[in-house]
Image (tube, rainbow, N blue to C red):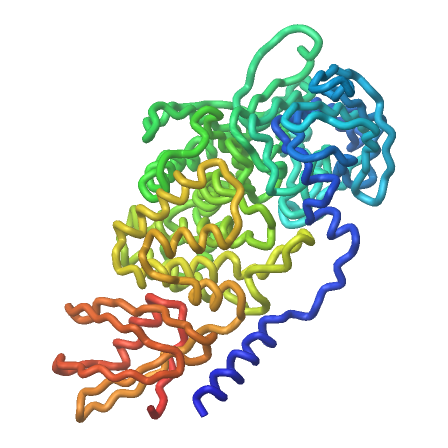
Length: 567
């Protein structure tokens, strides 16, 4: 009977986890898959020369140069650029075999023919590129890019004006993709290894800002601001900011020495910004403690007021929280602790470690970005207000869990999973921490993730396996339960007050679910290793044992249901 029950529960869990199948299109596959026109080369560097036309809400003649390395036999080249932007010209330069042994010759400024299909272009390569050698594409384009309707959730260009009527411009494109405004290989798995150079048109009375560090120069591009990123970077993180900005900076004494920290606010908001942005050093102190050194010392850290709520743009974090603590003045956890600090400063900056330093290859695994960063809010709260405050904040955040569909989505079609990748994945991480019952070990794993996957793109499985390996506990069933189903496991129990026997097991779970339970309660430490659908018994020797308060404490520490049953 037990085998039949486990089979039926597992079957129905699988059915519940399968959301209504989405009709994925060829365009979804082109965007989400490393096909034969994408997988044969590795992007090393981008140079962007961007000429916004503020009056027309368009891009005048702009250029993007790719430097890439051939790692496989040559095929055609997929270039992602979303309509209605238009490609004018594609030029190739690189080393090609001469046909005489290993002899190579350089070909420069060769115009390539191309075809357009929706939001992609296919450049026709009629010659082979020597494997292991570098080549360049120079793409000229123009047009009126998509405008964001509700940024940052609905992406595109943002053309606004500040309170003084001056232009205030930026872009938000996470999920939608950087190809909404410049031609690129729009796939998270391939970041430019050697960073980017951004030349952004200057406008009188305005500042043109982007990622990395600013450089001054003379000559051909003196009408542009030059920003240089020295580290690998996600495509969607490269962002222009244009406005009447006031700038100030400080040096932060961090784990790797002096970190240049710069701030940009609109002129009319500079007094409020100078007061609110003092939270940045506190954020850096907390996160360098929990996660290790800030990952981009070479590029500095900037917090820039933006015409939308906020986004984790690497080394140029977007801020639009109206200089309020909480999330636009609200505590998303309802615990009270979320009003002690500015949500956007903490959350979006936390992404510098999880999303920007460690990036998922496929957006189906975005929980690695959002789950860990959501949990960074708990860790920040704990760092400054104590462990119990962190527990209360994390517990309160669970009210935002929907359990509508699995956190991990379909691979290869540019699909994100449930929004539960924020609070539910965060609670899962909190479960794992409690199950380890060793905060020093847990912290070392967070630091180790950022060290061992430094500036890398990863899969969910890599992160899952790393945590299991370093903790010495096989958490594979825990990850499967919380990331790949919509079921919340139940800690099912009964308590015989006369005999002082607590009987317990896991229910409403996948087969083999075996998450350990550790907790301190009324001055004593308890540990349990419940099994799935297999009742176990424990003699409780403590006098006046309050089983209701005991199970409530389990539920506060772990994202589980509590079910009193007859066992």
